[in-house]
Length: 233
Image (cartoon, rainbow, N blue to C red; front, side):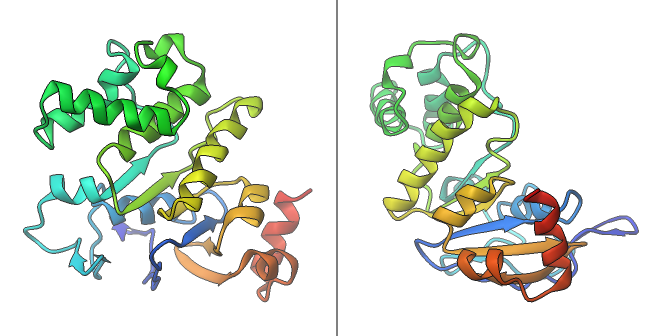
């Protein structure tokens, strides 16, 4: 994946298994977020193939609406509509994309909000919610479409430290429920405890990958060791 002469991803070769939580770490500018955005075609890679559940995401005539129902994404910024309640933010895609009736969309939205612990805030507007609650509404919005995989791009980096825990708890519950997840984050403690596999990226390539117990304690590559030494002190 290139932007003009700038090569952002240099031949990524990666497989993610069903129900696996894969955590991607690395310095700013290493290509982590671009990799996620290619997975649901928010960015169009210049070359290569991305396949999800047997279907080619990078096919020329892929239905992007259907694709993005199967691949949920949660961003650093919550991207909620300020003039809509939490429930209305969740139902919008259900009605516009899936064509559900208002009643069915409301029921599905309420189930998703309940799943992230916010059913009591269904009628609240974003300005009435904390940052952590807004991010959980954003997660509920993605979950309501019943995706096969969830992509998380720095989901806690815009939050005050005391609000991070609630979002990570929801992510851990998703993993326990069997959701396939690809997570870009600097939450190293969460990576250690929740990830099945950790990928370290730098300068557009995968430098090293492995289970968190090995990668954090005994990284094989000097670049990985240097990065971990910086972020852990």
